[in-house]
Length: 303
Image (cartoon, rainbow, N blue to C red; front, side):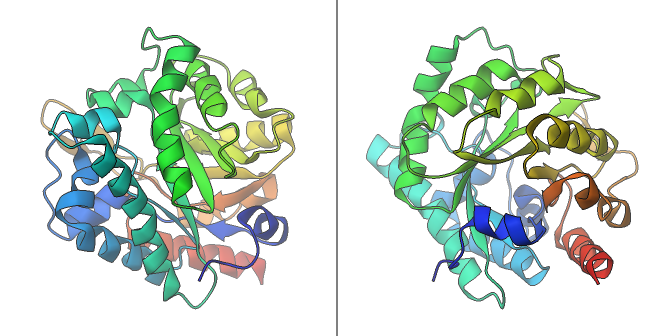
């Protein structure tokens, strides 16, 4: 059963906790994600693992689940010999798996269908650089078929996430026009700029007057950068802000390992709703334990 209020209606009344890094939990479950399709491979080869990961986050207190479709594209699956009809079915499955995990929750849980950036399909790290050399129209053509397939599965919202620049953001906003599903738009940032170097005021300003966008913000970034981004997003849009940073550790591409100490602080994040954050969670390296701590911290401040 889907939640009775829409996600937008819920955000008018309360702050909601997002889940954490899906890949992080899948790896904790023993899954091998060492290929170009990353967690999307399990939509075909291990859907029960994705379902179990979603369930772990529901048990941790997540009220919004983000689907395993971040790196699931027609082009990526085609390289594995998967036909378009089967890819569309797998995209729909991503929503079904999250919806099934949500059914057992004590409180309403909404499903956000992940629409990752073009660079995620390339699997070369370019989602953290942007500026692919493609036009807005070319990027719109890339994104629209996946948007249509995900929208057909009736998620509560489309998560246009880890967007590195304003060119791709504009393309995504065009691609979702008329799909019948609300969206949130979330940039990946460094400091007070997108990964491609545009100012955040410019980036967040793209959603002005767009009633389809129910929240705007940042994800897959340093927690310290996320705090300031929440303030800028709220100042620019006056609407709900979505924020789900990484753990604060750094990825060493050469060694293929995470380095450093995490700085994801649920206690500090519990102050962010005062600045406008209404959807809070975690991204890379943030697991159910930290989501549970965030849920507890937010609940404590709300009392």
